[in-house]
Length: 444
Image (tube, rainbow, N blue to C red; front, side):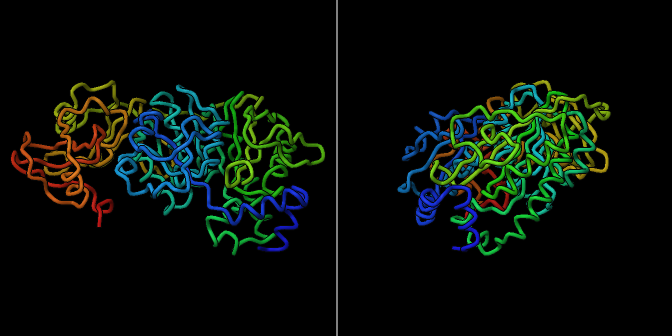
């Protein structure tokens, strides 16, 4: 272990607790999952998995896996988007943010998507989520996870924090900045995080975090809530970042996090450390810092351009009528050959790269609509799909491998489900179902 790093930890914790911290480094990494309540309840998933899982103190939808618990990433429930694998304390920031149905929420540094999908579940198809990631490769991972968990009432973007926050200036009830950091809480999990650590890196992260917070400030409405979080321990990236931000923005108020997990922050002159929360490994998680702030000043909102409704191709409407027993109130939009739906009117974000807005229904080609996997994973449509076929365990394994299924079904596209939860889709000719499960997801 880096001696400079340990000396810094001792300055914050003292000798006795630093020794306790060092002891945690040889213990197994905390493992957990967060139930996707867009699709399933907590108790129901626990019964279905039937594994040694206990409630997490950091979120009511969080569960902690015992060390004896087998790997969960290849379970069918994970593939169905019924849960998200997440280190337990990582769910704490959204608990403090406390998104409510009907609110507009921005997740500014969103990949890989754990907190975005948690926010979406809390919004429960009401209100709206804008989820942004600046790095294109990580943005694709964000998109994949949001799709798997069935998030639909959201716009996913790939842009700089400055670009996004200027575009949505004054729109947001709540903003989450889960900032890129030195990752000191990840040392047990990721050897590279320890190898990359240096005091210089800590200071560089702190400068970047301040810039991101300055961007986030512009997105907030008056009385809007900003939550800042990291998975690192350094005072420079946590208490000092918030103190500096407050000094430059006197119209921002530091609020109490109003939770009973973790412990108060590290003491800092002129800063109320009792209002922020730190989670150390001794507290049941790998490490997190959380601060909650409120904007007191007015913030004239940027113009929100709602895109006009336009007629869509007959094949688009016919596909929805064929696939759904009832069509919820939805807005439909074509973007090139791609078809999308969502409950909220579509809107324009100028000069912002939008990866997806709403549910991607499919692609119009040769006078027909070829559906997309997202249409069959979207939680909003659970319970109203017309052509849903239940697979047994053997059929499921064949489907996950990309094999055709010898099943009689009505001709056309069918939703394939296991234990009532969709897995994907296929196309039936009446006697056999051609497999349409995405190749990148198939079992090898």
